[in-house]
Length: 142
Image 1 (tube, rainbow, N blue to C red):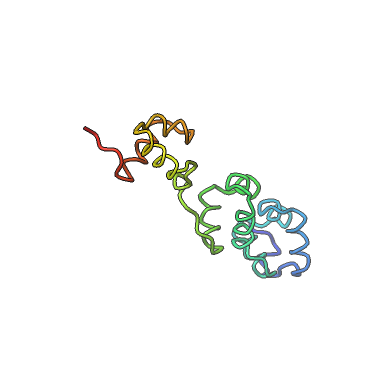
Image 2: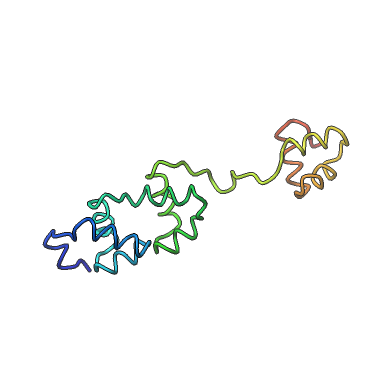
């Protein structure tokens, strides 16, 4: 539902919009406060000088998770990801965030010739170690 305020193109003054967003810190709560839909809330924020995409991208770079942002702003995680990209930040695919030390796996394998020992040293499953070793041309299926 678009509010009567927005139908008249009569937005609240920018200082009120900024204060309201800072108080709510949520797009959905801000929109509900003025009875805007999400699209009009974003336009009202932009008119007041707040780029929601940049705000969300900044929060994400400071350590806030996509899930937390999604829950707070009541939009999907895919939307949050798109907004972060619009805010100028590149997001790697989730599975690209390696949580193991490939160099350690290769070094231990070179020393021991055991994928299992390399996996144990890196605290990963042996199939992960084998995949890393294949990537570095150390493991060949016979």
